[in-house]
Image (cartoon, rainbow, N blue to C red; front, side, top):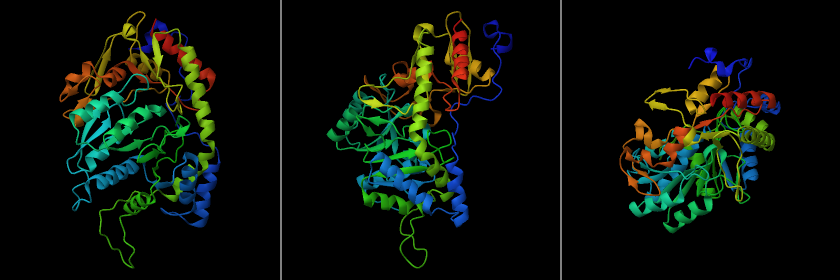
Length: 426
């Protein structure tokens, strides 16, 4: 679509300064604690910033222990590795703790949620989403246990900062004696029944990646109430060195510890978590109100039980208002139709005016890397791609997009974005 020649967008000028999907919002204390690390010469994976971040996160979330790591992905890898060891014992050499065992994983998510299962030589079985929160469908999880009763591990994500149906998911896991690994990478500060996400799993993780609601530019944390588990992960993250006068190694280790510099940024960010959530909520509500007259729906949540952190505001186009859109591999095409639009058209229109949106995560079962893995919906078990037609996650991907959700976007700038979206439907 050539926006420059499209009369629907006449009179709109590109933003002089790009409106990002979600960029870091800095406050000044970050630089203070980074400078403190330089002044003390703690330019390493140890130091006061690391220790203080662990203490602050454990206190804020209400968990027993937090272990600061280099990334959320690293934290999730060690969580999955630890779960595999608890379930199946210590592996021989580097074969992986899962040893070919199946693991039930959220299907609608980023690849980092699922890849650690492959790192540990496991086989991911993907569980479809439900429409109320876009997260793992409890009925589909129950069906998966019916089909694969031997499974003992579930990896659950809270998509875009919205808590999953934790009461139901945990009840299913408990009925089948399964451990729950909670990927709360996107949901720091979100709560379910008044309790913070990241505290519901047998082990959980959060992320401080550059676009998260609290950032260190990178970084993540492993969360647990089990001191032995925290000590095990901390040891693995520093190459599994034994308490010996020399470098003694009796287990596979990893270079996953958080830098004291990164921890300085996180330490400076953490006091502002509440303010970031408030700003993100205002963005969500302005979109909700400003788009209410269009055939679209905002990403949903259970207002009776959960309070999201509103990390990203997303929407889906109603089926009756979907213009033709084709996606294949890494390419796409679409057509403009009066009164209708599509995610790709809206994303192109936003980009033309210097605003960043993003497609919804492409479900894992649709990825070339995992297209031979099993998908389970609430209706049946699919061992091939035939489930796309009935899969909730595939439908959300087809009709959905993530809207510019940057904390520094002004209300006036957001009004222009809302206007652009309206014009896409003309």
